[in-house]
Image 1 (cartoon, one colour):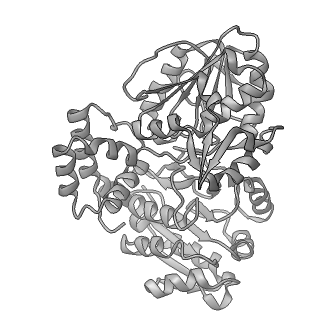
Image 2 (image 1 turned 90 degrees about the horizontal axis):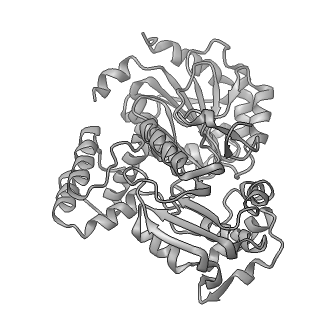
Image 3 (image 1 turned 90 degrees about the vertical axis):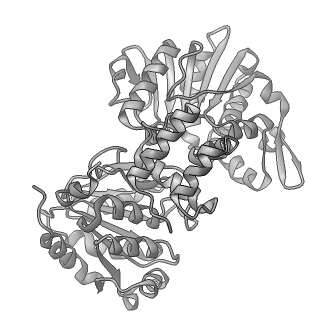
Length: 274
Length: 201
């Protein structure tokens, strides 16, 4: 990084964004947030911290860009295939017993994992009675999710992930190729509702049987992680499931006692004692 | 926050980065590290996702120190070897604890050695020892230079001993490290550099 960004400058910027726009990054994990903002300064060619601060304070249209650059939107379809295999074999049979299945995908970024879920639900003949609420802090990423258009160059990798996740159909049947892009089958979107939701400040909006939140909590400090776990706990039915990223854990949270991990390797917990 | 003051009293830390050809070096160096090494040893190597278990069990079998998985927000413990997980960048919070980040690849790599070294430079300053091994990628050179600029001790594998000398050569083109070392001498060098730093109080 060419420009040094001090901890004090980072605090100043967090304060500005909070007071001007209501986005609270105060309880984000510091090291990663520092990297994101240093990266933003490089990519958008700010010559000084003062210039970035002036832009944030004077150009409200820049906020969307700021949020887009500060949040991490790296994702892929069927990321960690074994996680999806475990969902299909251990969670879906339980979901199948409900007349209406409500799933919350919190921090869905550009939606690749939401479509992965929709594909698996369809193959298990559960999609028609499911609703997936897909939320993210970043409206730009949600726009990509809603459009369901991804680089065609990714599809080879996604197809491999899909098969490793236990998929048995032709993966290419789930998208149409146009030039160098792939448009995900519109039928998969019919049961998906997209909305912005900020885990740092917004509250519970429904009750779910399954909450997916992967590689989001690693960007939060302990205080915010606990807030989010309580939010999830409030939003989860008794005997509901929570699925996290491969390096995330519910173990150290204040709600840990009310959950048990259903699979030794995959990060899936179920509400209620074993 | 009074970060400058805290770093003086912080735990010491050893970071080793490498890519192609680095495993053979690790298998020489890690078994020779003293059991009472007063710093954690963090390994950042390029490999494919899903190969974590293999590398860990191989190193566990040979290393003199225990090899452990990294848990996010955990404080690295002295005398323990940690392996950066595949598909995440490894960072350090201002208090020195581990942080993971699944953002864009850097130098076509995740974990990127540059990312971890740069973060260690900020969090550990002069309390960090960085070592760059064999590799076919420029990743790590800039980060090691950052560590040196923040007062850290830098060691580059002697390119003449590297299976792939591109990575150490990139570092040597950028700056002069404190040491250029052969694999056979590295364990002793790490141990003496750790001892030179004052123990945390």
